[in-house]
Length: 294
Ligand SMILES: [Zn+2]
Ligand SMILES: [Zn+2]
Image (tube, rainbow, N blue to C red; front, side, top):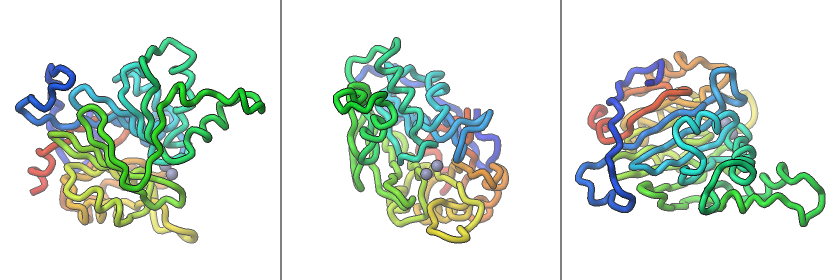
């Protein structure tokens, strides 16, 4: 299903090739990325929309990007926890990470069988934050074994890693707390996810020349007081323009905006395709996005 609102067109999802693990580089045809929106609500889940969570897939590699409340359920419509390759968390606001708590129960105390802990890329302090909630006694020796469920790598500005067929690059962004944006590069596509952030040079640089920018549009307007920590739809358009993104996917549309209004406001400032990345929608991200934009 495509986003319900938007100006863009998305090529139909292509079937995944029957590649053997490790043989991807020998396949002749570059493969675009697949983005599936598990939820996008801010700042609490709605009846028809979990909080922030996305599944990025490519050649059998599956990464859960943000684990907002309510996203673990729909994630499993696409991939069981046992087969997930990694989790990446933008920041520790609960609407982006709360389902790590129940994922922990699944990984350690249920029917999920994994050969090793699930790789988790997340801001510094994530293990202690999880343990602080999960530990049921005050005795230090009884701290919940978070590291048995997750193999945690703490993010830093410029962090890079490879997971399966995907290269992940993280940049620190401006959200009034430690927060990161993510670039996912594959042989046939590049996707940048803003996480939560005010417009900032790091995000624009990270998104430079990407096929698709998945950008939050949480703010209906400029903050009355305090620092700016989110994008408005116009900001998302400006970031997409400045970074020469192939298309703009608006997500995490705030509680005082409608998706249709957000798309319209962004489309008024950005000539490329603009779509709403709402729950249940999926997008093929690849060179076709850049060709359509040029
Ligand atoms: Zn946030
Ligand atoms: Zn948020």
